[in-house]
Length: 287
Image (cartoon, rainbow, N blue to C red):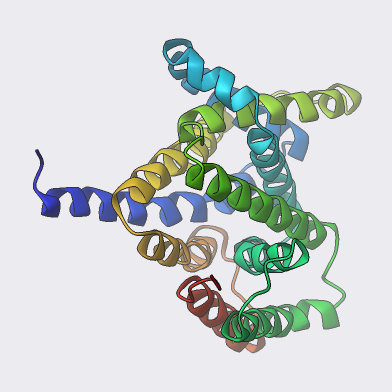
């Protein structure tokens, strides 16, 4: 039996890897400026599926289990929408909008009959007000557009995925995270390939392949595995809270690599949004 401390250290390390890997997604996408968004999506998901194919072959029952649930379709749409959004809008803005998925999850559960507590509603209001304040400079400059809409759709499917995974986990019937990711890549390809052929694609050149590999391995396969490890070894509160580091990582990476500086007037809104999300994930659901 492994010592408890070693288990916690492995889980903590995995939990810290996850937001870093996800936070780099937008930077990798923006480092492919000459590739159409649909080509980036197909390349990302195709490489991810190839890497995970051995897992599906070895664990066929998990693959069949994942194919029988709608969860991978939601995750596949998440990958498609996120990639398309990062092509069209600033990295930090897209990441923060997507990061509001817990807020949408609470609202969806409310619609489904699970009334939130007053404290949850306060956290939701704080996060939404912060997000509106953060995006206000872009709205005033006419900078909100398709990319922000795609990011909102991405947050919606992420919330649906989180709710579905939670319900299946409580029922003891959730497929393995790698099986979900592999089948998600498959569904994402099914959705994207018709658009790819219609767009007369330009195939990646040799210099773009390392970035595509990094996008597929570092920001698709790795965070799925690390998040699964963290969720299995840490409390949901710790793993979810550390996941809120993703916008911070995205901001630092966007500044360092892309030179994308956030508007100074938007920073208070970012702080409010992250504070609302932090308090929300620390607030227990109403029993």
